[in-house]
Length: 352
Image 1 (cartoon, one colour):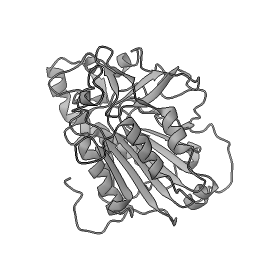
Image 2 (cartoon, helix red, strand yellow):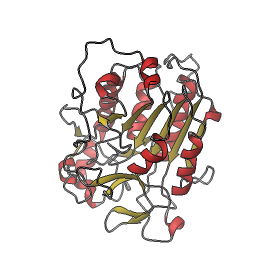
Image 3 (cartoon, one colour):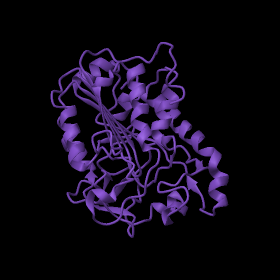
């Protein structure tokens, strides 16, 4: 990708921890999805997702001390392990099989996401978040997955809950409805005014807009499978709700050793759809743009610059969108959530 192959030395700082580094990057285009199940309709094709694992891999190897051998890629391109539901779970198991204190992990997913009725009562709004493997069963009439998807509860149980203390996991969910897709307890609640989306590439196909593509974000939140109160519920604790203390904040290393540290970066709040272009998913592209110069950020700073980059990347296409009479959309807002109190991690340096 342009800008990632420069020879100068990288300067992004890695945390002061010894241990192994492993990453799992999954990208699904759904181009041949109907052949995987022979049931229902294929999900809309995503033309740029296959570029996203390479983008993340180059960031990890150039700036954060990962080796190519540390990174597993699943893609439905005929050259990599196919990202079926079964293969994704197996890859997750392999990712953390020997996890120990000091290890760092990355889980990156680029593809479709959705929402389904909650079955265990852990969601205040009654909806679980999902990601779609290549063998998802999809109903175009309902514009949603109906079987063989992966629920946020499963990601938490299979990946997050199995990590031992002293490990670090960074999750990137480049998908629609992904805000609380890792089912973490703490969510950074941003009160910034929503930015109007100036350009939109259809999550389905640039030449064939679907019904929900012409809706505003407020309108999409009223669809049956969208949350009315996007990311906040009684189980979610916002910034400032944690215990107050005058004690000196712990260092990153002290903080991680106290327990595992899991953070999730999602492309949008639970009620929003994400946009995609030929270069890849919006969130992955934002990470590329803000990290490729080697600058370091705290979690708070990174969330801010990611949000600004997403707004910037969507500005040029408002004319394109409006000329087609698709209405207006608000710019998706990145969501940061964590296994630990948000007001404790915001000052910590970001690192994969």
